Each structure stands twice: as structure tokens, then as C-alpha cells.
Figure 1 (cartoon, one colour):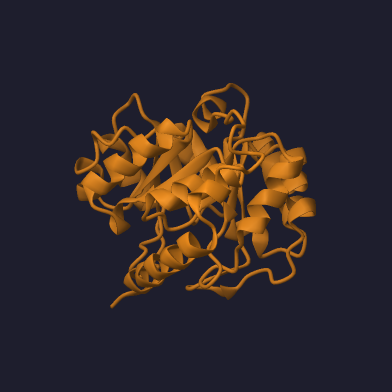
Figure 2 (figure 1 turned 90 degrees about the vertical axis):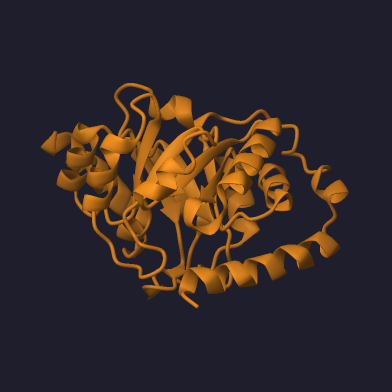
Length: 264
């Protein structure tokens, strides 16, 4: 069993426990449940933006602890002030150290689009995402069957949430071209081996429909790398570890965005 399989096995158990503790009727009473969502897709199509989706992440299975003492308020507002187009908030606790409270705190003080970064396997989690103020959910092709991706995408749309479909291989893209996802993300990190290569994005780009909004995820560690991906055709760039490994992630984000302007 690889790490992705372990995470998914735990996630199914976690979701069933959550259903008992917090019924859907409770989630639907959230102050954010009727909130109009901000469109990440539209933001990424805007002009003169870096397209950076800045992530808050405490740890990961591949890197261990990255940034243990996270101040969500300081980092999230700092990211936005630095020029980040959107936020990505990890809500998986066991493997990534994130919590739903992290996203709630970020939502309270930021108006930008927020992605709930988690391993989504059930409609219940989509309702959770809406209740905590997320605008976008992540669906991972390696973790779900095409029929399930299509179903969860339709369900997310019924709640006015957008969907970021994450792929890593050509067959994952080809199997989900009719999913209805709003954004296609190419993860440069193999979720089964955790090996990272930006060539994954470059090689898969020609296979992605030209009409799709495209994001490159993971391994973007320099302005030159981002600009190379942007020139190739990517509109968004999901970055977490490159910022979170610093004592002040928000400052690292600011310096990175300033460097993009210098190198472009």
C-alpha cells in the first residue's frame, strides 16, 4: 500500500466519524453556507496578476514538519498583501497538520478565493467546504474514479463551488475530459512516490484543452521556473512549501512576487 492509499483509507474513516459528530443539518447553518463564492477561474484569467495560489501547510508525508508554528491570520493576510491571487488551505490533520479552523480563520479576514486542499472522497466534504467558506475544492484524479469525479463536480457546482481537478498522468486527464471541472491542475509531484519534476507540467500541457484554465502545482521554486510555466500556457501556480519553509512565509511570498517582476 502506497502513501496515497493509506491517506485515502484514513480519510474514508474520518469522513464517517465527522458525519456522526456534525450532521449536514448543522453544517448548513454556517454563516458562510449562503455566502456567494469568489471565482478562482475568473481571477486567474485576469490581467497583470502573478497567478500564485499561496498555500498554508504545516507538514507533509514527504518532507515532515515544514513550519510548525503557523499563524494563519498573519500568513494569509501577508500572502494577499504580497499579491497572491488566491489562498490554498490544507485541512487534512493527520498527514498535513491542517485543520478546518485554519480555513475558517483565513475566510474571516480575506476576500480572495480560497481552495480547500484535502483528499475529497464524499459529498459530505463538499458541504463541509461550503460551510467553512471555501470557494474551490480539489478533486484528485489518482484518488477517484472518473464517475465519482463527475458526480462530485456536479454536486460542488450545485453549491456554487468551483472544482480544481488535479492530474499527474496523461491517462488521468483523458479519463476526465468530460468531468466539468472548472480548472485543470497538473501536480508535478507523484502522489505515490513523491518524486517532483516540472517536466510533468510541460509534457502534459499539450494534452490539456486550450480552453481550460490551467494550474501547475508543486516544485515551483524560482521566478524563472514560474515564468517558464507561464510562457508555456499555465495561468496559475500553486505554491506552498517554497514559502512555508521560511520563518516568515508571507515575506518569502512578497520577495518571490517582486522577483517575478524583475525577471519578466
